[in-house]
Length: 159
Image (cartoon, rainbow, N blue to C red; front, side, top):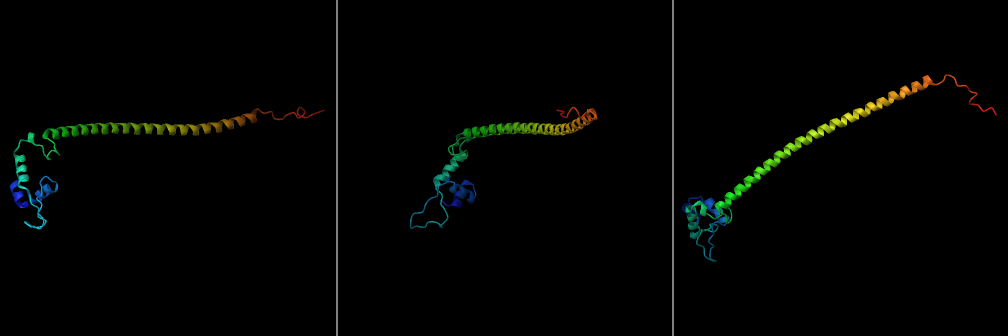
């Protein structure tokens, strides 16, 4: 049967029939060597494949076992896969939310650490100023408390 005839029988477009042939849902009828029964490049479709697809459409959804639900899958398998995918999506959303909260807490902790580091730096700068002031007081006290004149005879050797 030609692609156009198969498309009409299946109520599909010829392009969709070509897609089904390419995906091997329909089987192409090979030409015998040396004989040309249809135009080259124009595939033919097996009547049994068209009948199988028509029977598939007429069967209840619970009995379907073809590629509509994946290779060899059923509607139950498809539902289970959707449920598992939904569970994974929910878990991914929860992990993403926890990660967002953790990132916010980390940014807050880094801000606190930065503030503390700045406080330590300013404290060190203040200690440097305290050292300068203490050094100046020490020098001033040394000058004030030092005797004005030192008797020289105590320091000379009279022997």
